[in-house]
Image: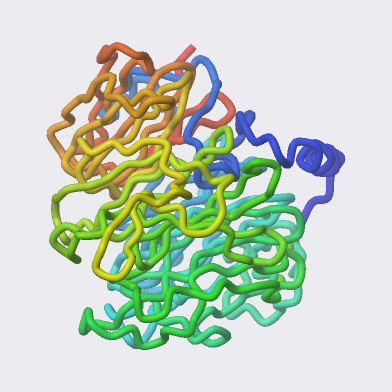
Length: 487
Ligand SMILES: [Ca+2]
Ligand SMILES: [Ca+2]
């Protein structure tokens, strides 16, 4: 690990700016770029057209595994991405594994990889060939992520290339130059009894000395039983020691399916909160130091029925100016259906769902935190981007919705004619959005709809375009592509 002046300076700047996350700056060190997860960057000069065949505006390309559901993060000269082992970067590592690959940012050179065996339980907890779905968080030369085995991992960003085995973990099975140098690991299955449904996927977020992770605790394969109802849904872990700081109370037997929303962090009404979607279809805010539940909001109408009309929540909430924006949806395997998008006043406390049930009766909640509801959206697993008063939110049916962030009124919607798994990224006033057909559509991030370009990536884009240091990073099913304007 390198301890540099730059790190010390960024630490100082980080603590000063801790409550006002805005632009991520030149790097993209986590899912969403900043803890509030708003998918917006002011970076200039990124390409809007490219061609993978002729290599127009292609800086470099690197081979990933055969299925890639992780989103790239860029920090400290590295690009990290979760994938599976079908690229066999290390010929000695055979068979299905969860992999995090680290590439050199400047030229795409493969640097090292973290290798995680699959769980013996198979698809119940660790779906074959899905690889690592978590997007790492990089801070001060350390990358944190969740493995396919439900472990929260801390690894050295320089791996073993710095010639030192760092951290408390010294007995790495693989410890050559191209292997991951593990600092600590926290096994959520062993320590908390978590039984993640199909896959543990959370993308960590940090505040001060803690990182926050959704456990993915869920139903078993019966899709009826929750085998571990007392396990938490959200935890805080000490960044240095890897020890548990707090756990939330979880949602018990009320988990509809899995828990795959990742937490966001922000200052809301002057209170630092962790906000996350949970397994019962609610989004909740927690006091950051203690994990105390501050508020909860049911993202479904009270008369909805799982799985026909009641949804789970897979999207990550975004926090902008004391407001939480989030849509609900279902696992892509469940297909299309109705969805709901909300703006929530998260300064309120308690149950802030707009409608409450009293016995058999439903009545308006005088303590409602609903600022608006947008009902034209379909099921969504995407995370929003709020820019210049416009919320961009896609759905799994292939529509990108542009919504006035103050009123919730539709400004326009655009049909991409393919399922959308990833999230919109606003860069320098333009929205970039990938789809299952492999097209990356670019539109003006404006109140009127204007298509700028469509560029195909050769295979499905399940990820989100990421800007860093003047380069655009896009992952398709099995490649990491770095794009920049050729000089
Ligand atoms: Ca090291
Ligand atoms: Ca180590």
